[in-house]
Image 1 (cartoon, one colour):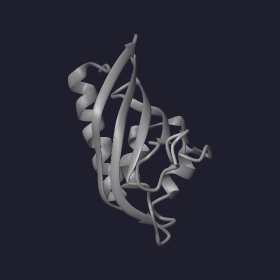
Image 2 (tube, helix red, strand yellow):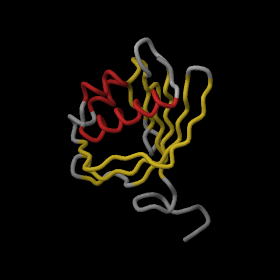
Image 3 (tube, one colour):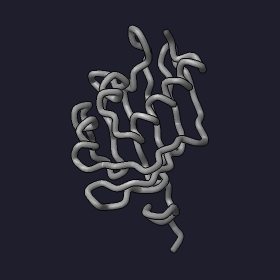
Length: 134
């Protein structure tokens, strides 16, 4: 299997559904063993940390990707998208809109998410203001 468009689209649909529902077992199968996630404030999460987020209090009501752009480098795809979500972590609302970069690598059997990097989108609710603007 490779990170062709149809495989990648199916992978992103599966990953989005697993995040939305907090399905740690599904996420465990979708993430590479050496996965690293970078949150919007620059903190890093190992695969085990990422999987533990839902048990620790992360609950999404919605979780969607939009404005998806894909670049391929051999068997690796770099996906840049807008993540829109509603939910809470330990009673605090999560940012509604984030810019997301995903690194999806080919692996035996199916693609695996090797990395995720989230960034606030300046000027959106919950994010810092656009630089140079009040």
